[in-house]
Length: 451
Image (cartoon, rainbow, N blue to C red; front, side, top):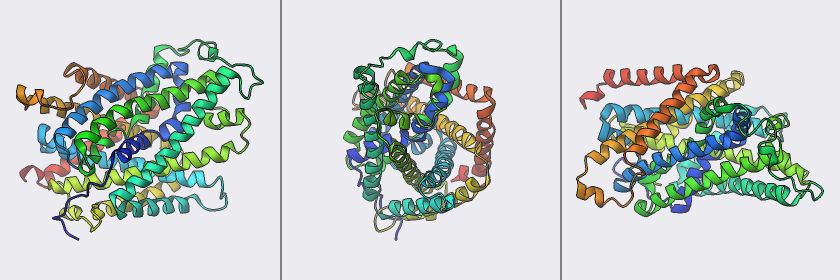
């Protein structure tokens, strides 16, 4: 092993596109959507579209910098370069923490899902097995990681597309409903399209933005993409439309067939959809899909945490040992350290009650909002460092610069305000700032400001 090697550029466009889709399409859609629907009713579609537009503007801002300067660590490095070393330090460690927290939830979810088939085996054993397997995959080569993620994400996407097509068959042709077309009147015939008004839409925003967490991973892959100047723009532009299709399309179909106020009371809406047309083992099929969703997110999380630690070490903001790269071209020590901390998650999630899962999602959302805000601020500063000639030569530009960035920054502040307002998510506005204050303290205590 040595620290003079570089990360291998083994990720192709299909890997990167599916990775960002895989990270974003997971718990938020399979588990979180029922909660969000109960808050906003059919108007949840508006929340997903508004959130999707905000994410597109954030991703285009990230893409502008990533195409101009493709590096591992991405937004942490850009924060350091354009906002200062402290901003880079906080952003890197914050994103690492965000994925460690999210992964803790995902490996626990694996244990819960496996109990459907093996009820007598303790769930922590499956959580541990998932952690060990995903760590091994990440340690082989980045291409192996990319292949696993490609197939995991593909399973989820095929399941969602199948559900959308089956649903359209029920809506238009009455398949599974005696040939009587269901139509889409359920979208407005149970208290109206927005039964809980604007308040309901606002209340759902935190869960909606949690669902989009992970798309910024495209930036993290920049240091290992084979041809970043071509691959990253294409991945960003296609991911936005695909996520809108999967989220808005899937929820449109579900809420057209089932009254919104019944969703979540009778199990997973995905299971209901397949049972509607007579697929008996629907519960088993969907359980397999959500299992791969959890494994996929855990896989992505270990990838992200390893790259962030590697990047922080390169910038002398973490132990130099995390710069070590294995013969297969991956930051092995950074990956193993992150995975070891996830063992704490296996123990914690085994001991603590279910309510902690809501806390985990809100803490993750706080971390994501910080990251997204830093991306926008870094791009605003980055653009100011360029001359008019350099701006005209940018091959991939941020959307609606600079007004789009200011509007989305205001939107992110609104999301944080809403999280502070509602008791269930208020914990994130306590844990998040304490963590960031702790990072500032460690930054100065360890003398990173003098390096």
